Image (cartoon, rainbow, N blue to C red):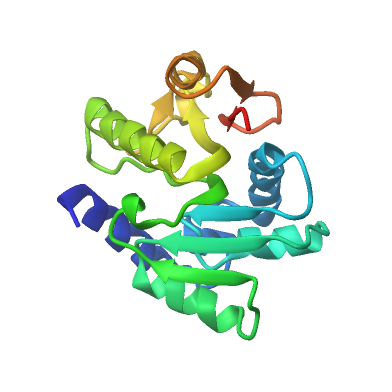
Length: 210
């Protein structure tokens, strides 16, 4: 695991140890915002059944719980996280269910190939890294998400259009137009930019021609 990924691992391991199985345990402000984000990234599936999905940065498995709550069914779920502590919590909270797996990884390239791959919140906290250093990590991770997805992938990022007085030096704020163009040019003609759900972020959805 390279130094940056080790730092991410430690950051989120510390969060889950401090806050437990709560949105703050995966560094989200609250459950309401977390569910709004899930609604956006799940739009990549275009359906509620019969697909497989990778959840990169799965935390304690809250996306899976939300999918069950929203009546998704007949799907197979793989949750991946850099943090061993997160994976232990996820496994303990989801025993005896054959439709899902939680797997500790050291790099996104270790994911299995699925129909879809999603990532919610994993690009927001850049810690002490410079913007260009973190962007390099984000783009490489997106590339891995693409390679592990047969039908499409989705992710969210904090927006550069956030209120200036609330922006923090340790967070990564991105240009949504840059990511739209990047994904449109590199991965697929079917790309959606969602920036209208009242959070200081945007979601990119990439769908592949099947």
